[in-house]
Image (cartoon, rainbow, N blue to C red; front, side, top):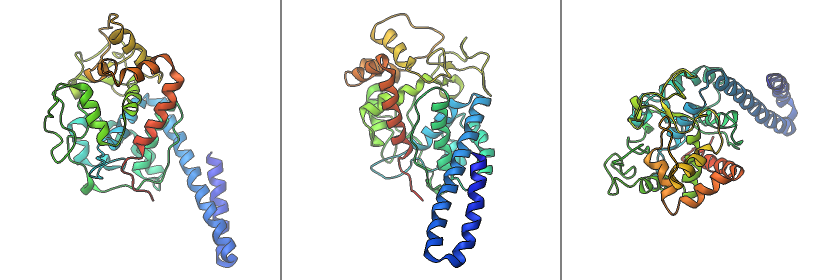
Length: 320
């Protein structure tokens, strides 16, 4: 891929010279070449991101980083979204973003190498590449997002809380406790419907909990600091409690575990965590049929997940 990018640059230089004397035909070919060069750079960048994920086992934190950039979107207000605002100190300091400075640190050298690629694009790229690298579906990302400045950092409180009492998550004071403060299903809908997403998106996206860990020191949602599945890492940080044993493999085991323990009442593994918002997927009559279908059909889950992830990655974007 690097060779392809270099070849594109050589062609680009040749066509720039042609534009000076080639008239309309030269200009048209130059525009085509510039588009090809940009795509070659994106492909090369994706390869570097994949290598980072394989070396650092950092796929889950890159997914969370992108989701939290997207997840502050408010469809009614038309504010927030996948615009790179999470790189700014004011947003990184939000309580829901604890621990995400690591993701910024990991991606910064790649951003320096591919300066023409926006932070907004790179953050979403990291998430999609992570899903696929860990065994999940390919996500057909669209590129060309513009970055925003620190003045566009969203108000705190729109990100979903891990446990009750659940905040409003929308409106002018999203951090205030909502009227259904102890209803995890209502919390799920309040947060995701605010973004313009639907119940199927909620369940599909929740399936990303098949990777990653909950850190008691960050969210307070995990009962223990560590688990037998995470005590030795891997990754930059150790500890935390995963939702499933193989927490670096993207599959449908999250739904299979919820089916066994929540829907069918089998004994839960004390080394794993199930949040109230996870259990709601099997307890709520609207969510349960979707969650059960994903437990039984991984291909269906992958198909729906890829579509919902793409939706999430395009919320609130301003395109170049």
